[in-house]
Image 1 (cartoon, helix red, strand yellow):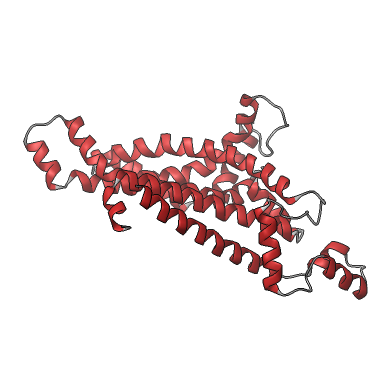
Image 2 (cartoon, one colour):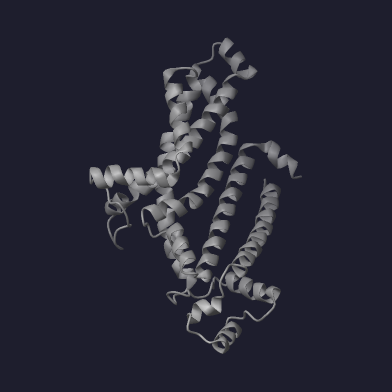
Length: 315
């Protein structure tokens, strides 16, 4: 297991390096001149040239990357063009809001998706299976922005039981914070639950048709025991899909947080792109890539722990 974890750690570090290079190159080739953005439209060419030198934009791209990577290792992502505040604190604050939202969405998705998938797998061809399959198809096909807008119209505009936007005020109680979280969390949770329910239905349904399950049934073993044995084989690919979906919640938050004006990473990214605040965009992209890769690293370790055959493959 230690060798497996060491190999996966090396792959994680290499992928993080490649991700940092990709993020740096994307921002360096983004439209607009950072010096021009910093000084404004009234700046003269001479002032822009001086500002470019101050920002290090006159150096080679390799030299600029090495300087930037060194700063990143020291958790220094520069300062925002629009607010002048440190990018690190700005991104960390926004990520705290997104993390809170994603945790609630993940809990809701698991509570909804896993039971629905189990019921659909164990009652194939029934009305429950048909209804759950319809829910999964609907949850996967409706765009996130449309689902969020619909929830706002129903619960915030029509019934007026939920706030339409925002995250409340700092220092508020947990109950007040959850009041602002419900609508965006449900918006993220429904597609997550739909994917989970559909995948559990497929994997567990296939496992229930395996010869060892049929043999266990013929021997008269309790139904609960048979289902538990089948679930052990279905749970490993399900964990992988869950990890991918958890990582994708960050991408889904980009749209959801914009719809609900929720001050998380997604909302910050949209605002920074609109204002050409490239240091903030750079920090957000780097953090998003790092979080996704770390989630997948943890998933690999969990799957490797559950499936010894994967650990043998890296020896």
